[in-house]
Length: 168
Figure 1: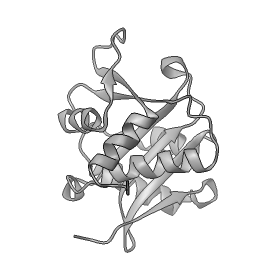
Figure 2: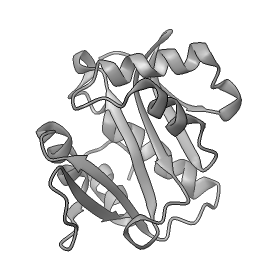
Figure 3: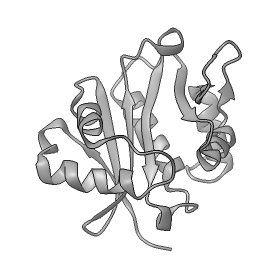
Figure 4: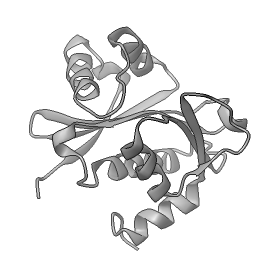
């Protein structure tokens, strides 16, 4: 198993080179990628926090969360989660979510106890991952292209403990 590091990508680190490296992951992951300009706007949003999974000098995954989202009644919102195809199914996405949640908890950010996201209905691997993490469909969410999903913060942590991604 490869040795991965999970790092917070600060707003100060988001120069052209870093954004380009992160965007390569977006392009090499499953699902429909954001266009480059929207991707950059997501990273640069001051209420968003991004974590990257790196192996040596290579970024292989990232998660961006919005801590001030109004979606689904106001929740921490997973804006983007992607892992390069060749690195998928190694627990990287789950670990990225965990790192983001630990950051929120350690920095006393208001989680409102709820984590939410939207996932393309055509992205079956992502949908299965989110279900495995404890996310459930939002019953009154009506969209032809995406599912709305929410999960309780404590439930996600419990699921991650059971999968032995974090210590009991």
